[in-house]
Length: 310
Length: 310
Image (cartoon, rainbow over all chains, first blue to last red; front, top):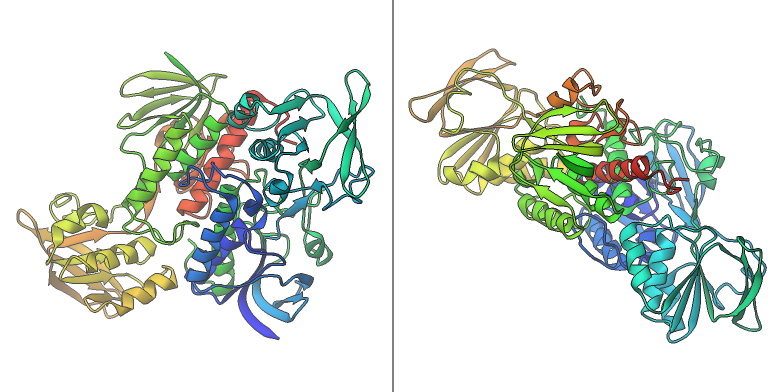
């Protein structure tokens, strides 16, 4: 069993920021990440609101943060998934698909995953025309017709990104106004090849081998219609990756987000949480970074009990 | 009287991050700053822990953030000091040395100021050998002997910075271990021209026109001694710039820091606080940025009451 002072679960902005502060504070720090470092931030076509970078590709920012983190001495193990947690004792046990670790403190920064609509055809056509990530799959729809479903920042950003690739972009939103930043909405309205479908719900996705059409329902006039389409990008929010933590006794709110206080503490001693997996109200890269920093310094205080804290 | 939707007091990392999010959300946003944009972060010789920048001069990072903020449409008025606040009504009144403004919401991001030791000679020799900012005044002590007082990150960073300029650097700390990051302490110990004076308190600063010597007290063996010195850099922490907010009814803790909750709300409706002026436990650039973002999006929700928030 490998022994670490601090184990961070997840290598998104929160986990990487926590790693930088953990290692710089002198803690032997390991980050475990089931996919590649970067988190969902790496999926963003363009990030224009992380202070200091006026405009940067999400993947590029993720890579910069990961390189920064490694330069401080943190070990990041990618493609290593956590499959079990035992957090009750003084030593925290973290089980992955490859090994078992123990640590003096754990920071859960496991983020969130794309929410599904649960409409007929969604599962069947996933990867065959149904996608949850514009930057990952957008290039496959060059010159084709795509539909984005959703009304928040990520839906609007995805539509804007796809407008540079697809021939036509429709964005279907079940309400009559967006909840996205006004700067993004302005850009959206200005795009000639984007059409906004207000009060519109996606009811079904159909096709043969690949997506060919969708069934749309207008919740204002009650009309149902078919629309020929090549790709469907679903951007209707996220759910937290908190199941293992919950099973290990970490308290979550009614939507499954880990409850934290101003110190990023959970209800379990020595266990902190940061970023999109928490019930912090703001899901943004800069806010996740701030939480990761706080979690790491608080974990440091917990482990070393120096007079660091007043 | 000028009318704004959001007024942010202070243009450090918290204020600038809040500005970016305020303007991008479509709020007519003004930042008022008594000095230059950047806050105390701009005084740091080198910042190596803001995720995304492995190593950057504090002033350069501050300028990047200020430029980023201005690019979103925020107006930043520098060298305009807030001298009075009336926060009780629905419209918040902000009085400066130049004008009176009203706003729908206010974010207080006024930071902190260097704490003084209150020893004889400190006030008299300020600007004549006594300094609170290594990067501002260090170059004046090229080839000379300097003393740094303190034991936290800023004291250690200041000593490291001065070691590249001064001939000899002493660092006096009243305890027997630093509370700085281990990465910084390692660098400090490795420097040949830095001497660490443990358990040592500065009792008096003497000289004629300029600083010439200091009186030091060893709190372990009770000995007092004189030491010839050209410059004294005092780095013993900060106090919050919260006086005007306090006078306007904003609740502070026993040390004067503005009390906030997880939404960066103060006790006064429509008034938020972010960064070093708050009682948030972590005083770091990345943590201030996270708080600024949260404050701006919560203020946006307060002003617009959209269905932005779940």
